[in-house]
Image (cartoon, rainbow, N blue to C red; front, top):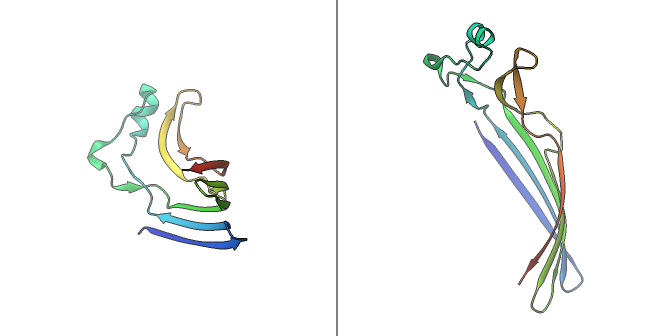
Length: 125
């Protein structure tokens, strides 16, 4: 089951500005995967999959919370926006894929990016 919930609020500031606050929650069933043939993978030191069991297994549920705060200013011919986004604010390590690691000689889980901050400035003509 997938759930995507969004909410936002804009607070007017003076005549031409606004503070923008946004919140998003995403939850999705884990990705379906093709499982490894662990014995052959370790023997051949390369990824070997069991294609007869393709997409029967799933990784853990994907979950992420994002927040954003920004300021907008409307000028006579131009609009300025400054905002800070924080994606995956809980720093949850969502599973992405199982891969053979030649350095360790084991099949390991690869994870998606954790918490990420970014600032941006946008001009709209």
